Structure formats: C-alpha cells, structure tokens
Image 1: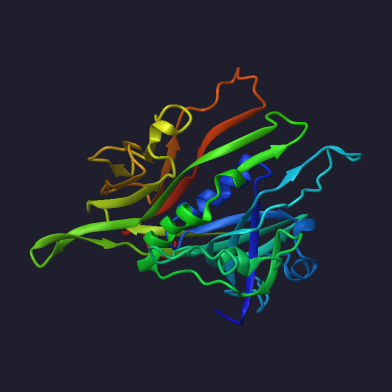
Image 2: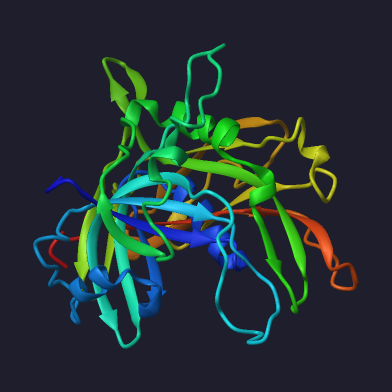
Length: 349
C-alpha cells in the first residue's frame, strides 16, 4: 500500500440495491473487482477534486490506495422539500471489508470506483471475552466519513489475512451484523418499512483438481486482472477438461432456515453456461442449517468459447405482490458473478 490514507466507500439502506451491494462485497472471493458509483455531490470535496475525467489516469495519491467499504442505516422523512434527497444517518457506520483501488474516474456527474476485494474487517474476539464496542471497528471509524459517502481519510483498519477469511466472515455475522440496521425506511413510498433478514454467503474461490503425490488434491486458482478501458475486471483462468470446484459457504443468524420469511425454502443456485461448462454435480443447494458448505464441480469444455462467467444467486420466497402491508420482513442475499477465461486463450487478448 502507498501512503497512510484510505478511501472509505459507504453504501446505505436507502434502497434494496444499495443493501445488496454490501452483501455482494461480503460474498465475493478475494481478487474479484467490485464497482461502486456515486453522484459527485456525495463525494467529499477533496476527493472530488482528485477524480480524473478519464479511466486509467489515477493521480499518485489514489494509486493502490486501500479501500474500506462501510454500510450505514439511512432514512428520510417527509418535510417541506419532500421528496428531497437529504438522507439522515442516525446509526454508526459498519465496516465490512477492505480492498485495493484499481481505477476511478468521473463520467459526467457520476464517479466510478473499481476496487479488488481483499480481507474482511474482523469483529472476532476470543471466546468468553466481553464485547468492547468502544474499541471495535465501528468506534475506529466513528466520525471519519462525515456526511460524504466517499472520502479519503486516515487508514484506521486493516483487512485480515486470507487464512482468517472464514473466521472474520463469521465474526462479522455474529458480532458486526445488527439486524435492525439492515432495513429500508423511506416515508412516502411503497413499501414504507422493510426489515431485511439476510442470508449471508461467501464464495471462497475456485479450486482445480489434480493429482499430487498419487492422490487428488484441490489447488486455489488465482484471479488475473484484465484492464479494459473504463472497465477493469478480474478473471479466473481455467484449464479445459480439468475438474474445478467452487467453494461456497453460508451463515445465517436464524436458528434454522425455517425461521426465515418464506418458511425455509431458500436455496443457492449455480448458473453455468452449458456451452462452456459441464456440471457433473448438483447446481442447486437447499440452505438447511445456520452453516452450510459446498464444493460445486464444473469442468470447462475442450473447444469451448473463450470467455464466460459463473453466477451464484440465492433464491427464496419473495413477498407477495398483493401484500398491502407497508411494514414487512423480507429475505435478502447477494449475487456473485465470476468471470472465467479458457487457459488456452492468449493472455494478451
């Protein structure tokens, strides 16, 4: 990392889309690039001055700068200027995950930020140790962002090591996630008040299967960045004909999936292009406990198209369209898309 600054990027509960942006950040495997965008008026003025007009031209102050993604409960009430857009932020900011800025630029009145996700912000404490909120991640960033939704400020948090990802992910769900904060409260619209019950899941990565010392083992496949002008992405290079496995883990706070809205019918699904992949195993998994773990097998076809993607989504019973209630609970989760490329493809293409 260069320097001692950090780019804080905030996503709020102002809409369901903003909430799922945060869930996506928590679910993505290391190295995948996430894209946040903001109206320029929501940037801190100092940061606004630094944002270049063209992709690929970051000033030195922003090159490889650490990113911390935060969530905040934001709500609005009608007033003289209703509907207006002056959101109130009554709750503390919730640090989620760290990353590294890959590119940023302004397109008209919109600022685009592309960052590669890295370690989770840990809420872990030794078993039996009392919580100390005045010393935790929230306390460290209290007041650091202010009213801006994107700001450069001192670096106060570090992402954990890759070996700690499972522990740190679980520690966030246990101690960092406060269900009452994950809601959309917008007076004057329908629905007025939705409390989200989150199904957290994490894609730990893609692993290739092969023989090692006479037995089959799984090796992690690293991501490779490809810098398209204005749209940097990170891809997995997979070998045709070789079995690969996608590791997926879930975590929910409910004692069982049956306690969630919809009666526990939630499931994860893998969408894989049949022209690119064979799927010798199941591509649908029912969420059956507070913790689940799967390795989904996929085999890239020999002679397949050069590029494709794998998508993992959570399906659950949505609220009824004819439900007149303005106050309700709703299950929500992430969507993860993993770009993939045939290992036979020339890396310069």
